Picture 1 (spheres, one colour):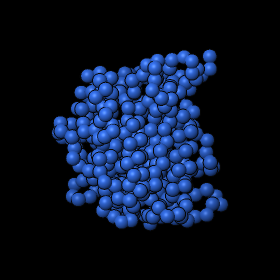
Picture 2 (cartoon, rainbow, N blue to C red):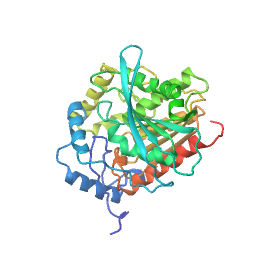
Picture 3 (cartoon, rainbow, N blue to C red):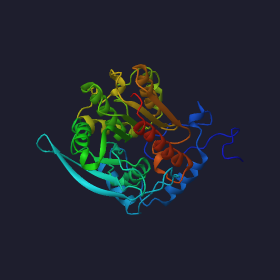
Picture 4 (tube, one colour):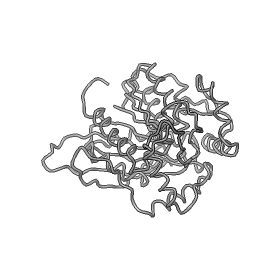
Length: 366
């Protein structure tokens, strides 16, 4: 049997984070046909796990689970490189603003390659995923090193504050503040402040999207050259906009009630309320977008429940005149970038390098 036997019903991948679309032998589109290579390698990962995956609203359980994973050692990006790898130095910087608001940045600073011209470099503000409650710069450090080396630029890996210790908008404010911090400290890192991008994944992509929108509202032109969002949360799912609301009731019925309540608990911990947030920066999909918003690249997984929200946001940006590209990776779930040895993840990271280099290295109108 071939890896992708179109005469046989698909077999599902694991529901690692509760964000896997419901599947059956009759599927609605090829985006949901599981990637056989991904599935086999993810199954092997699950078989090696020492502890079960926590519930979505078990914030501290997730932190402990991630610490256990980190003790297994680093997981370097296995994608082929376009450039010769260089050493990337890491340093921690503590940032305080508006009195007692403090966050940390893990700086990934690549050394120059012998013979390459030394000039002002691009920079990327990086925001990890983790349901707003867990994750850390260290979890993404190998990936950030890879990107810093490949684009020959500095990655500012931001350790924004987490729920439940804080609530919105403090994490949003950390992310937004980091834009100005990078610009103010550009000389210290030999970066060109006009070549500044944002990269975020999942909850980090949500925070990046909101901060990028706010920057476009408050600055013309935007201080950002590019925004890169992977499997983003784009709005408060307690208030789905059209056309997503047309399928919301049927889709939510497929989620076990206990799991759905756990997702709502996370949103309550995030916003401090059981009611949907009305903050435009919390739900950029429901907000007006300035036409000078920076170019945006959105990646979604074909088996991710957030898939259609990411697609909708790409269309929303385009309809406001924003240069927007959309990548749909078929047959993979929400956390697909983390299975480093899969074809899907390897291709993803090579594509990210191409997109970031194109966005930050070329002097076209943006």
